[in-house]
Amino acid sequence: MTTAGGMLTPQQQRDREMLAQIGKGDQYAFAQLYDRLGGPLYSLALRMLGDSGEAQDALQEVFLQIWRRAAFYDPEQSSVFSWAVLMTRSRVIDRLRRRGRRLRVIVASADDDQTDIASAASQEESAADTAGRNEEAMRARSSLNQLPAEQRQAIELAFFNDLTHQEIASQLGQPLGTIKARIRRGLLKLKEQTVL
Amino acid sequence: MIPDDLQDQAALYALDALEADESARFEEAMRENAELRAMVREMRDASAGLAWSIPQSQPPATLKQRILADVALEKQGNAAPISASRQLNWIPWAIAALFLVFCGMLALDRARLERQLAELRRIDPLARATLVTLASPKGELGDAKVIVAWQPDQQSGVITIQNLPLLEKGRDYQLWTIDADHKDPISAGLIHLDPNGTARIRFKPTQRADQVKAFAISIEREGGGTKPEGPIILIGYA
Image (cartoon, rainbow over all chains, first blue to last red):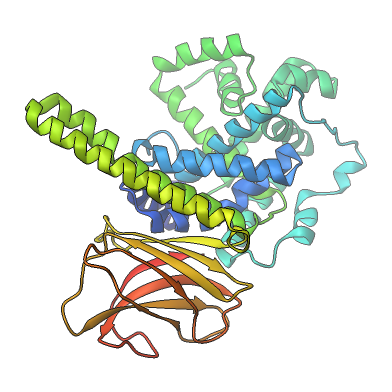
C-alpha cells in the first residue's frame, strides 16, 4: 500500500531495495527480507492451512519463489508486501485444493462477533514481534475493526477461506448483490484507511 | 469513473473471489482499462494488509536455516547453465567447447559439495547440525563457498571452504562465533588454506556458545587475536 498521495512509505522503499538486492543474488538481503516478512506470511499460511508443518512447507516454497523471481518483480503491479502475500495465498490455495477440501468455514454468529480480532490477537501476539511489526499489525487491525461487521466478515471469508462470492452468499444466506456490494465497500474503505 | 458493477468485480478479482469464467472476462476488460488495473492494484494492496490483522506467530528458527541453505545451494548450482546458454549462442565453437569443460568442472564441484553435505548429514551427530552459509556482505567474494556445520550439543563444528583468496604474508583468516550471550565475538580459531584456497577444519570456540547468532571470518594479523580487529569479509546468520 502506498501513502494517500501515492508516495512510498520508508518501509516500502526499504522492501524494494532489499528485493532489488535479492534480484542480484544477495543472500544477506534475502535473510533480512525473511526476518521482516516471515512472521506475517507464516501467520497467514497457518491461519489458512490450520497445520504448522504444512504452513512451514508453504513458507519455504514462497521464499524460494521470492529468491527466484525477485529480479522480475514489477513495482507497478503491487508493493513488495502485497506481492509476497499474494504469492503466499496462491501457494496455500494450491495446497488446499490439492488436499481436495476447503477450509472448514466458520460463520460467525451474532454472538461470535463480540470476539473481535484485535483482542484475540493481543493475547496471542508473540513477544518477539518488533515494534515496527506491531505497529503495522495494529494499524491493519484498527482499519479492519472500523469496518461494519458484515463487510469485514465477507472480506475475511474471501481472503482467508478462499470462497467465491457465490459461496459466501450461500454461506451467509444473503443475495449475491449484497455480498458483492459489502466486499466492494469494505475494500474501498480499507484502501482509504490503511497506509502501510 | 468506474461503474459500480465493474468496481464490484474489481474487488472480487482482487480477493480471487470470482468464478473462473468471470475472472477471465474481467481480465479481458482490465486489459483495455488502465484505471481499472490501478483500482485492482490498490484493492490488492488493501487486502494484503489482512495478513497483519490475524494473530501473529513466528515460524521456527530452523525453517530460516533450511530456506537459507536451499538458497545457498541453488545459487551455487545456477550460475553455470545460464552463462552457458548465452555463450553457446555467440562465441566460436572452440571457446564453447572449453566452456563446456568448465561447466563440467563446476558440476563435479557442485556434486562434491552436495556429497560432502550428504555425508555431513549422514553422520549421526552432524544430522543435528545447524548449517550456515557464509557470504561477503557486499558480494565481493562471490566465488567463495563457505559452509559451517555447527553442533550446539558438541560445542564444535566443521567449516568447509572453497575458492577463498590466499592472503599475503603476515595475515591470517580467523573464524568467529557471534553469540547472543557474549558481548564480543568468540574466536573459533585460525583458518589455514591449502594453495587452492580450500580448507576443511573442525573448530571449537574458545568459550561456550549456546545462543549462536552468526559465524564470521575476518582478516587478522598473523596469529590472530582474542577480538576481531581486522575487516569482516564473510558472515552467515544461524
